[in-house]
Length: 190
Image 1 (spheres, rainbow, N blue to C red):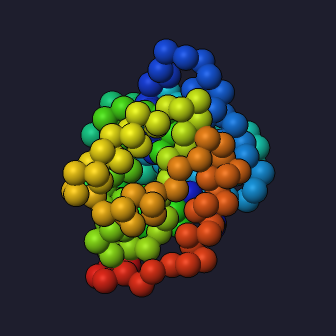
Image 2 (image 1 turned 90 degrees about the vertical axis):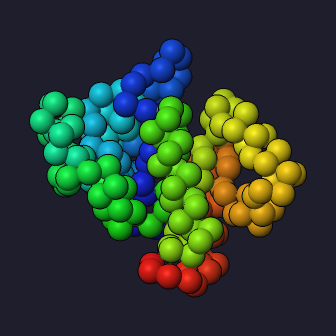
């Protein structure tokens, strides 16, 4: 895995542990030589993960729509900042740059991004693994809800099992790497 797309909040959240988590993820990815692909922001957990990876000598690729750059939300010190025209382009570019995807704590944007790339994987549009870093049980309520959806017959068990979920980054990276080694062939695109 050369690059990991990290979806996470552009705010800090209520608990300082979230910023500590984002910093540790950025630093550890840099230490392992894994580049960070993210939404390009300088605020909140997004800024924290980028700053930590940069401080540790890592590659950080930001992707941000022009309208957000014009609002001065962009992190100008990343390795590469790609400016696009829309959120749709942003997500497509991030997907192209990344070998896998992970969600750290975040809100609606984080959920929307991770669900989109996960559904793309299920549909065979790409074969890149998707995971949730469930530090402190942050994603546990969501995973429980997904199990309920599966129980109702609206989410195949294989799709749910394909989502990598781990409480710590080392275990999550291992699970993503395992899925990369057993890559299914995409039905369309790739």
